[in-house]
Length: 205
Image 1 (tube, one colour):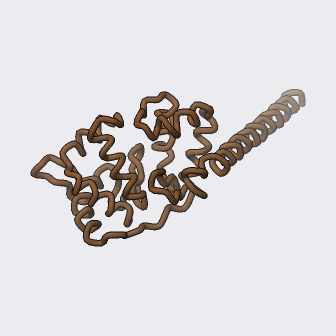
Image 2 (tube, one colour):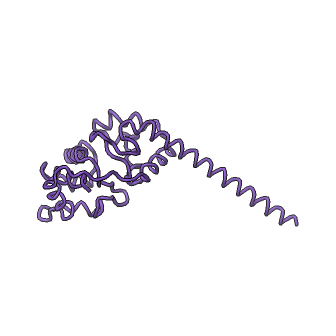
Image 3 (cartoon, rainbow, N blue to C red):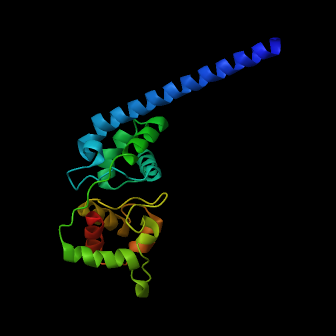
C-alpha cells in the first residue's frame, strides 16, 4: 500500500511539473509573439510580410536560419550597415527563449505570394537558379535553397523574397561586406545582370 501511494504521489508530482513547464513554454511563446507583432512588424510587416523591399520578408522562413541570423546580430558578426543601424540594438535585448519563440512564430506564418514584375528577367533567373553556370564553376542555387526556393535546413527560403533585398544581400556577400564564406565562393563570379535575374526569379516564386 505504501509503495503504491508513493508511486501515485510521484505520478501526480510529475504531472504537475509537466503542466507547469507547458504553461511556462506557452507564456514564453506568447511573449515572443507579442514582440514579433508589436516590434518586429514595424519593419517586417504584419505576420512577417514586409511592404518595403529594404526589409526582408520573414514569413515562412526556415526557423534554424532565423535563429542563426538573430544570433549573428546579437554577436555583431553581421556587420553590414543595415544590420548595424536596425538589428544590433534590437537583437541585444532578446534572450534565447524569445529568439526561439520569434523564429517559431515567423516559420509558422503563411508564405508571401510571388510577384513577377519582369517575366523575361525571371525566366533568365530560373535557368541560373535551376542549373547554375557549370562552365564557370557556379552551382545551381536549387542545390541548397530547394527546387522551389523553399530553403533546406540552415539555408534560407528565397521564394517570394523582395528582389531588391536579394540583390542587396548578394552584393554584400560578393564584396565581403557581409561575411558568408560558403555563399561568397558561390556568388563571387556572378555578374550584376545575373544577380538581378536570380533575384527576379525568386521573388516570382
